[in-house]
Image (cartoon, rainbow, N blue to C red; front, side, top):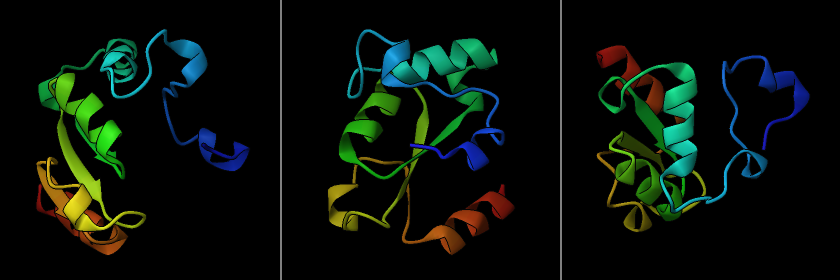
Length: 95
């Protein structure tokens, strides 16, 4: 959920009203890829929940799990794992 003050930072926002099948189905991420006109290989999803990770992986997108709301043991199917936002920003700086 995004408050109005953050929404302008995103080119595309997909909500449950925009898809027939929500997570863990890949439809939300596939719709976002289509609207952004990017391929899964050009993308990275940042997720904090197992169903979101499953959704993104099913769409063919690499996932960085952010373990700020669940323990890292519940996020092991992600391609990358960051314990906090500092690690996430460091990962971004490396690429």
